Every structure is written in C-alpha cells, then in structure tokens.
Image (cartoon, rainbow, N blue to C red; front, side, top):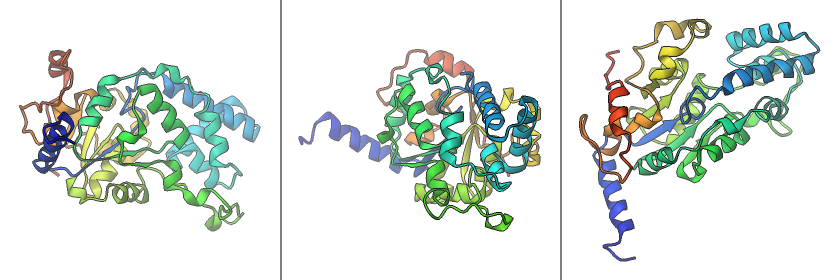
Length: 301
C-alpha cells in the first residue's frame, strides 16, 4: 500500500491521537446510551416483562407489575430475581419474550454515531447487560457494525454458567446460579478484563448512575448521560441507596447524548478542552450541540 495513501495517513493520525490521549480504552453501554432514552422502548419493555410474569407464573397483571418492581429493587433485574427465587426460567426464554417483542423500528439510524465510533483511536468495548440478540438488533437499527468494537461484553459473556449442561436448577438457595449484571463488581471486572487496560486509563460511558458509581469505585473514569440524569424519576433512583448519594459526584463528565462525545471529551482524540479534533466528521448542527452540552467538570472524590 502506498505510503501516501489516505488510509495510511488516517492510521498514522489515529496512532498519534491515541498516543496523546489519557485513555487507552473506551467502554460504551448500549441501551439509552448509544441511542436516545426517549425511544419509548422502556415502557414497552416493562409491559413485556409483566406479560411474561403473568404467563409464566399465572399471577394477575397487578401482581406482575409489583413483582417486577420488587425484583428489580432486590436483585437488580426481574430475571435475576426469578432465578434467585428458584423459578425455572432460562435466559433465552426470558429474553426472547421481553426483548424479542420490542418495537425496534423506534430506534433510528444514526450515521454520525458510526462515524464518531470509527474515529475513536483507542480500543472500544461494547459493555451491555442485554442479551446478544437484542444487542445485534439495536446496532443494526442504528446502522453501526458490530465489528467497530474490539470486543463485546453482554449477558451471555458475563453469565456462561447459565447456559449448557452446567446450569443448576437446585432447590437449595446456595445451589442456585447467580445472574451477573452491571453494577455488580463481577460484571464491572468482566468489562475491565475485556478492556485489557489500566482502569485509570479506561473511560466508561453509561446512562445508569448505579453503573457509573460501581465503575468509579473500581477506578474507572466515568461519563454520565446528562439527559438521563436530569430526567430520571427519583423513584427509580431511590430503589438503590447509592443511587441517591452519587447523582453527580461520581461522573467525571456529563453529556446530553453520545453525539456530544467529541465535544465533551476531546481528550479521547488527544485534543485538549476547547479544541476540536479534525476527524472528517460532518459539522452540520455543531453549533446547536455546542449550545446544549454541559462542559466537562472533573468531580473531586
């Protein structure tokens, strides 16, 4: 390949940017992070979970809704709670119902997102609690190729013990398998192992304050979706005590959306605050982004 080809020039520029950056890896959440939180998928997901509980357990719709809320509060997710309580629920059965019936057409294609992700010179890891099938459908709707990421951490990779012959369905509580999901330490460690870098040189983008707090506790630099932080109902946050206490102090950066990433954290590209890296990304609408994002503020722990 010619030394003066555009590709060689781009690779050289990317290597230079990475060398000048304080970050060696970018961990990115999927749901409500790579796509907006106002798609309306959340209410549909809750309804699907309620319907699954009604069909699986033979309870009323009202009891199902209450159970969903309680299992989330006590176990972090409905599926984790069902398995912990000894119900014979396979993850594939659960996910195919609650995610398989989502209206994915509400996720709009985002060509600018793909360009931003491609331009990140560091190692990129998609880090989601969702199952692989949901992840693939969401990325397909966004127009983002999975190959953009160097690695993927999802439900299946964090929970291999729930699949195959080794899966346990005992009646003794101690024999029941544990579902591993963010913000559990084991889940965050799975993300760090995939990152393969020093946590202090790894930045973690997530819309969940609980996940941000867990990542911060293990030394990650964290970025929180500002829109989610400002609009999230307090009732949801109050389900976890730590969520109330760390609403702002655990995020090193806050942004309106992933589209503001290069504006809020130019250090990823080796630039300094106030500079914009030249990445060949269309600048249409840049002014409105500049007017809307919250400038990065390092939080003193």
